Length: 264
Length: 273
Image 1 (spheres, rainbow over the protein chains, first blue to last red):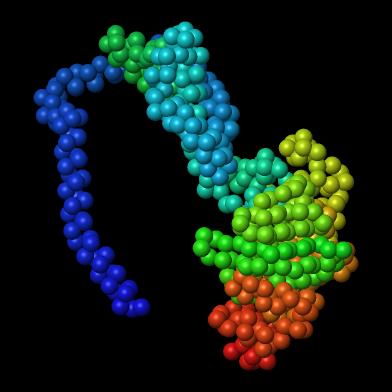
Image 2 (image 1 turned 90 degrees about the horizontal axis):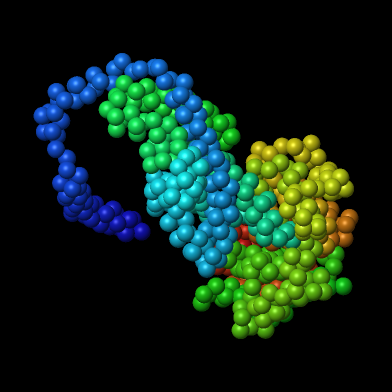
């Protein structure tokens, strides 16, 4: 027995000898290849340093004349995030359960997983542009965009929680003669609820950040003003808007984290 | 009256024969132990009784519980939910829902007998609450009703699981290694509760054990399995030390799991050692 163990250690060490440099080589190759594609040119930062100083100085001092309007628009942004997330949570519960292999058979969970993949693959901004065409400019288009994308994300996270759940309690409910749905309600949901709540609030936080740019494509919220001020080179206004965004996002992140912590 | 009847039962996992040609009958009101080394097929047999597992398709296997077919030739038959409701099942790992209260865990025993809409809404009646409270009193943990299940000790969790089976009003109680994860004192208390349910309520109790001395103390009849075959079926007294020696011949000494409150130099250990 001892010989086989030491053999194994030696084999592993031997394997590492050639695997390690190979791994580093591959990583460097990928990094170099991406450097080119991403057009990284640090020289530009130095060459344009003077321009950047001018640009940065245009941001200060921020003009606070339109502050109340921006705060109002930020509230609309938060409202978009609230409803976009809530609708997504409601839909992600059935979709999440149905794409879990321990709840639904493969001929149900595979198609639903692919559908959720599609919802997730397309960025919120793209959905927003589509919904602007469908329902017109404004916050509703943005809400729908967040809703569809977030459903895809949450359904995946929810179903992963379901698949990681302990089958024991479900079996404990099954042997009492309870039906399949009761088994899920009583044996499964209580186990995974804390995780579901936690990821939902996390998505709410990130949806507020996403909602701030939806306005750029006509999806409503503070993004409209941000886009207009940037396009009009009105950087003092843009600075005010960014400050409002930073303060609001920070406050809501903190609030949401408190709720998450309390629930677990 | 027959509570459980098993005929020509075959069960394989891949190429491994877990159970071969098992047949016996258990009468109502009996307290029977299924005994044998680990891997002898005890747990599999118990799961076959309530259709958690199906027997081999190409076999003549037939399982009847409480005069109703559970499975025939590897096909689960009959009203499985109703059958499970009439059979209580106790697990080694308790299988409680840890984030729910003790009370809710016991109330879950009612789900199989409730109208569907009330079960889905989780609305239990006063009578159901009362029955749950009585069951908790029966296993002497009434005062823990409002605690979360995951705050309990192993012995307390197993009592909750028994209370859940009591609430089902199950005529047959199947217990799969109910004391294997418990300390000696909790193990004794759990076995005493099972014995009392058998004696006072006349419920049929089938319990898998690997501690021979526990089986001797609480059960009148033993069914012993060895490598998936029926090795002994009869009064527990007939399971002599010589027979046990053969039953456990390939298993390590620790397989016997002789109770810790028994001095390690008893005749039994000598017989097996």
